Image 1 (cartoon, rainbow, N blue to C red):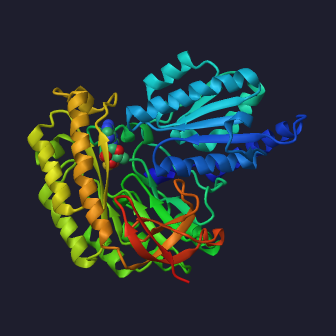
Image 2: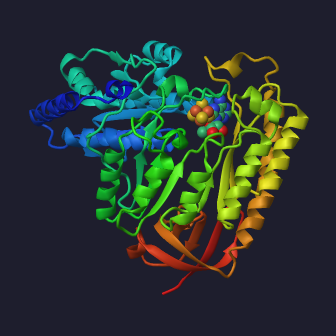
Image 3: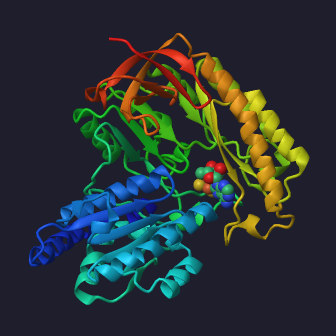
Length: 473
Ligand code: 5AD
Ligand code: SF4
């Protein structure tokens, strides 16, 4: 019953298509023949996926995609709120766009994403960034055509933030994917977990799963177009299906995706350790299409801190899960997220986390300095850790992990790795770069024609963050 309310009705989506036509007509009446759209994206893959739909709508409205904001006629900044650093970067970039607007008065600037869904940030932008045309929260993305049309005809600032807690699901919107061989596919949105440090449940609403038919048909289409890598997205993919009327969970979805014909790999993120099931691990082990790589955020290695974080697992159950994964898939790559300096974290708590890194031997970790998020429980906890201590612990964490990653990379020496070639290396354009099944970066020499294809590489060198090798013909 609840689901009917979260899915935006086809009539409402059609209405947005009508607005797309209206905007297209308006642009057509102008002297200018090309109108450029620029989207700046901060934060996670979900935001990147959202931006691809935002660009999809803009292109459908007659805009041409540009990677250069200086020639844009419309700029959308898609923001992140997970850490203060990301917010400050988004605000700083938005500040820089003011000069563009001074040069081109007709420039439209919109700000969306997680940051603007917070009341205090909305007020900040309202007061300090008067040249922004409109703000829209994550559950308003699908209304961009209407929002833009209104901005073009009324030239009055507007705020579309009334999303409530629930959130929604909008199907059938156009998408302009960044890559022609790697695709994001959201399977669910929102989060119900309320980890005490995290702002996501407040800005992305409650958990809601996309209809399996919609997901399978999107992937079918991608496979037919020759996409080689499909990454399923959700704040907590293991909750997939809990809100669906039929008994159907994330493992069932993965099994069905693997039945789709095509030479593609499936990845997924993110899994919550409290919900990652043996059934999911068995499904991974059974299906060759699923990359043997698992991102399993630990956050802290101290049971006391995990409790304070409201994570609902302990070190023991986490390690049991890791053991089961390795039992079923001995060479699986495991990565994690760690927060350093959560309120009240003692030296002993921190050392327990370092111990966990050594015990699990992660292939890679994403570590973050704890950032106070307004409205979350942890932000008002006593014993906030001084910045200096957080930084010192962060450095020790990186040092510990680097030694582990280095050792892990050495095992690839002299092996042949199948990689998906992504493009030219940013640091060394003479080389191509790709990723193997375990998500390791591999550099090698080869022609541009390999970009977007699978290639076999004999590994000759291992560094901390990447491998190098030779293309096998
Ligand atoms: N401070 C620091 N890191 C955070 N994360 C989420 N909230 C915060 C915060 N307030 C990290 C978690 C999560 C990742 C996406 O971001 O590790 O898994
Ligand atoms: Fe944030 Fe926790 Fe939800 Fe992840 S599971 S999005 S860390 S609240």
